[in-house]
Image (cartoon, rainbow, N blue to C red; front, side, top):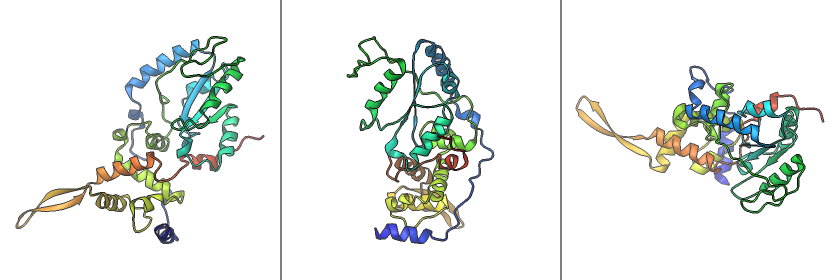
Length: 281
């Protein structure tokens, strides 16, 4: 508790970055080629189903969803499952639901599949939409009428709307880290945590206080974790071995720690919630 108090106290009055530099990044190359093939397969599969179950990350409930589902929304019943609710800050859950209702999504279920939380709500929601009752037990989805669950590969939208949306997707593990750059992602994560006043990283790594400089944070993380490397430096008197922080390794640990929920729950779409109009009840 003393460390948390020091961290927050040290953060008081600090001017956090108001924006993140987004220029010069090619978002188009973040869409892997194999996903285009998966997208075509999914489009043909959708013709065979009576109801669509879309699974998305609860930390980005309003960003990065595939427009294919929105196009199909008016044709077939549609359930949006927002998984990983245990990692998401859901203080504004009702506002999220209202925003999604404004987009035509009336059936939203928040789940945590690792612990089975709310998962049992999915099948009754689906069967209610298709006009059938069913019993869920292991692989059996429905007995009368016979009902099958058709799985499809995870597929990004063919076009990521913005660099910032791409960074959010990458933080949630949807875009491969190396396509964006681990240190860039770590910097965007730090920027987001500080702007949201989430200083769990200070407590987790035992830092002296909150900081908005990624190089300084990664240096402290590397030293704390022993992620250092010997580097030969040429001087006037010959080669000298210098111990330097392993910044890529520290960035990797920072990202993995966040994804495991060890830095606390976060809502990466808070900015979208704040600027988007809420649907009228």
